[in-house]
Length: 228
Ligand SMILES: [Zn+2]
Image 1 (cartoon, rainbow, N blue to C red):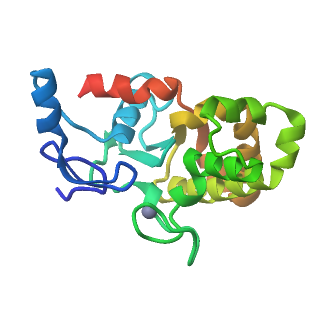
Image 2 (image 1 turned 60 degrees about the vertical axis):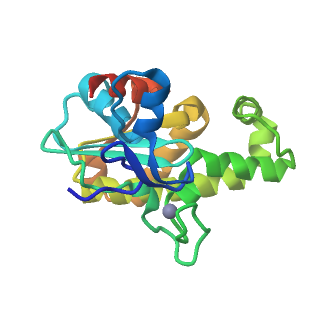
């Protein structure tokens, strides 16, 4: 099986743009510290496995888990089985000559639709580089601040919807579940995302794919790791 970007094989991370790790034997390093057997898996995949076993993807055959956080992790299930050979959707290009991504390409999905991207843009607009994620969430709960940032949110939602629409169509997904730190911002972002998807997806696509949120929240990755 070919190894995907950021998906460890034999305990080695070959290339993780966000961790800035290349050919890092993380299994060996952790094993030396904890002195116990260690099994290394991609976090997005772990979260998807947990949602398939216990959460939002439980009863579907074709389903997609998108972990939207620092980057965008993906776990795709076809015929009820995890397709480990499908690479992460975070690095599919959705904008020609677009923003530079940590992976080195330009215009990647996660360069527009990760939570890290959204938070960076909020910090830049408000000229407060040291805002924590919690502070950004509190700021976005204020109606006047939210209006001030409306164009940023609108652009973010637009790109996120394009990516989701593409992935769900390609996989004939019955359910596409969004997890990662996006779930903390669900009250601000999820209704807007649904409205945007309503605009850009065909009626048959909307009928085919239900978009929901991770039932296990941002803990899905930890729970999934225990299942491996
Ligand atoms: Zn990329």
